[in-house]
Length: 224
Image 1 (cartoon, rainbow, N blue to C red):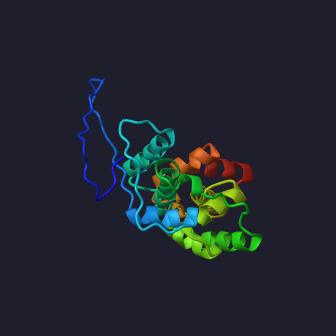
Image 2: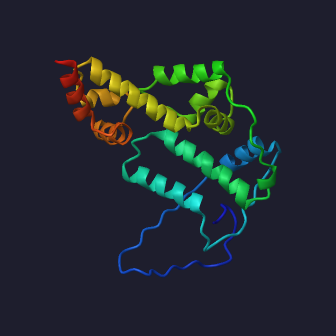
Image 3: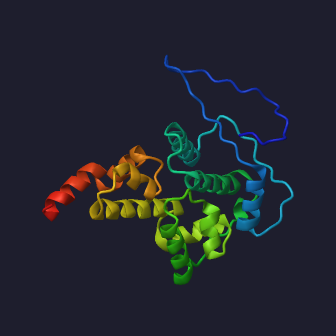
């Protein structure tokens, strides 16, 4: 774990234990993101944060976030910037909590979103499903910073903003499949998916079958 602008005092080397090739993933966070998040979660002002000097350690959550982002990159980022922003925010909070002196000061919000705030967010998402939604845009509907919004949203709904948006897109795609003869490729774009392949993968994961199979089953059951 290296901090930008800090001189390195050691050299890192890896030795592979397998005959197969090794791939590495380097995650970089903006210093401003860490500072803003520290101000929000610890309610304090920091001119500069210093990360603990760490190397050769294992962190399950960092590994999980890294693999999730890696998979997203390999798929050419079909989930859009909301996914990456949510992961970056989670990564920033985790680093602050466990690898800086800010950790003990991080507060957990005690209340969730009000019904009016959640309603505004839900209406905004449903109105803009076809767009590449950002965490900042959703947070503005509730009047919160991205960090506080993500925490309060999960506390209120039990899911992350990204999961909520994805579920809304799946439900919208289901409705279009059931009520129109629109091509699946167009349904994918109308629902906010990157392409038909992204729709198919996500739809099957949530519904248990492909959009094509879902349309065929619905057509048969409806007697069309």
